[in-house]
Image (tube, rainbow, N blue to C red; front, top):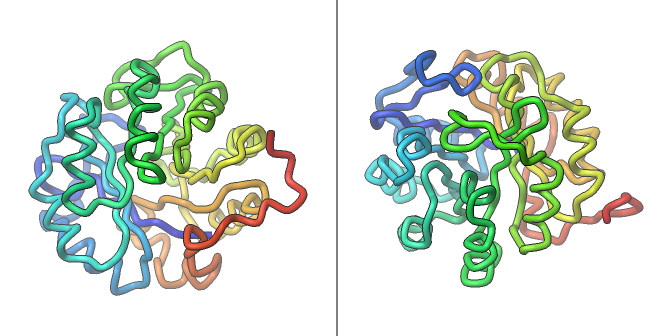
Length: 257
């Protein structure tokens, strides 16, 4: 299973929010490029970047920081936050971003997701951020009536490469991932799911590793890396090298529909 460090960008700085609350942000480093290099040095094979300003405003804001990170590291970078039209997605992919993560448009403009999956095959990920099972949009400031599971199934049919599932109530809290929700989600999908939110220890990562045969192929870790609760090197050693995306997943006897 792949351990993916998160770099959340707000005003060009590396921050973490508590349960997605912009008023509860904590700056961990003012140089996100240095942070990215640090995770690479510790063995990261992929970075998860979120433009928090973009998620709130609906357009990419931290492009300079994102481009600087992409140019500075030799590993794959995925980016989400404020990607609500073709131009913003194409801009990121053209600067070397490996995957563009769509969130709000998956709910509001699913036809756009289908178009982008066709134009940029294997480069589109949908991030599903759930609050009590319902999908949150616009930087988690609004909650739709769409369920996470229904949206994931719809997006899988459109050809997205992966689903990133975040339980908002766990994000930034160090309370552990929502294993029950993840198990329910992956049981109905035929594409990989990346878990996000709440990872606080190696024990949490090992509990996610138990879900890997069902389709949980990676875990995004944020606050726990910055506070030192999780060592990236130890985490990678504990759950694997994280290079599953280079080979087709072995789904075995799983119950994917």
